[in-house]
Image 1 (cartoon, rainbow, N blue to C red):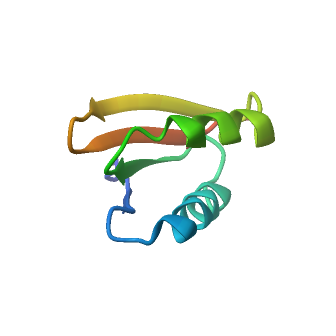
Image 2 (image 1 turned 90 degrees about the vertical axis):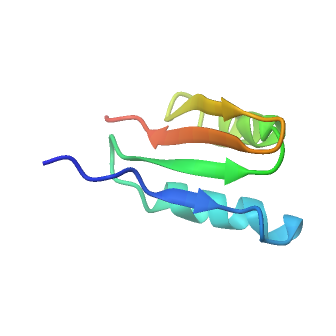
Length: 79
């Protein structure tokens, strides 16, 4: 049985809290799990932060790329 991929919609969060929520959600993932980030802009700077702090430990797949909603599947690489 496949469970639905959880979504984290940060569009209503204040910008200062968004990365904290995203990294907490990522940190709670087991190896091989993922979630879908829903954002109101391209989270490209977040990608670079993941690349710096979690190199080769995450996946990043755009599912929707604007102009009003961006969705990115972010996962933890299975070890």
